[in-house]
Image (cartoon, rainbow over all chains, first blue to last red; front, side, top):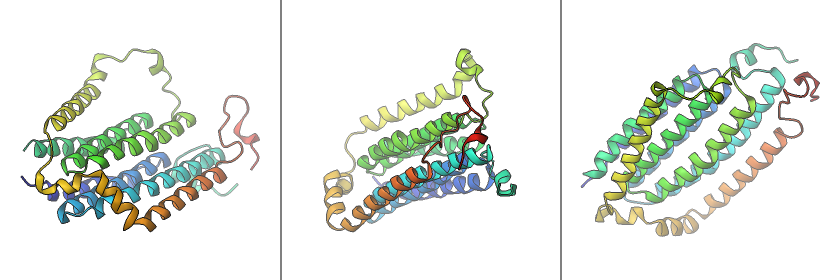
Amino acid sequence: MTLPINEALILSCILFSIGVLGVVVRRNIIYVLMCIEIMMNAAGLAFVAASARHGSLDGQAFFLFVLPVAAAEVAIGLAIALLIFQRYKTLDLWVVARTKEA
Amino acid sequence: MAQNILFYLAAVMAVATTSMVVITRNAVYAVLYLIMSLFAVALVFLSLNAPFLALVEIIVYAGAIMVLFLFVVMMLNLQGQRGDEATKRPTRRQMIVPGALALLLLILIVVSLSAGTPAATNAALSDPKLLGELLFTKHYLGVKLSGIILLIGTIGGLHIGRGGSIPSTMEKPIDDVTH
């Protein structure tokens, strides 16, 4: 029995593409952060698939290094989102980009 | 064979729910769809002989990180016109999609648990003990750096969000908050 490694890599590409699409398309900063999460998760999936392909545990170890990066990024990103909402009273990134600094 | 079926079902579910994250307009639904997508990816990990990472994915990603998202979404009360949903009972039509997804997830978990032990050739891949040993010998520096990153995240979050970061829409207008 073979593991579905190639399919997993394709799935990782699809998920990463969806994440990129979301970052480009969505204007709400919360959605943008969520799509960055999707992209990180897709990268982790690629690590795990590569680990299965090479029969070594290094890829799985690197997935465990993706987790703290994602957690720290979310903590700071959401704090910045709160700050933006406080200052501009909106989470729309287009509005924020066009607003002059008060 | 069961693992391949598991993989394809989980992959389809991951793509569908992840697309819904980008498509849906309600932020709370987006968070819930993303949690479901993370569960599906965890099942993909299971089919790739990585059961420990599947559990870590569910506990850390779906359990900790997404709850943070949900917390902020609820705190900011985005598109606050959805108050009617708290009192109204969901109709039968609204239950179809979440019900089908939850049923699929249940079937996948049952199938994966009944599939038995993974293939013998890759048994070393699914051993959490070996992974832990590798992590604390070969990748020891990485573990230290992860700790520093988490510390930076904590300090940065505290610093950026300090003092009156909760928008107090109830008591006073937001203008009163001094920066």
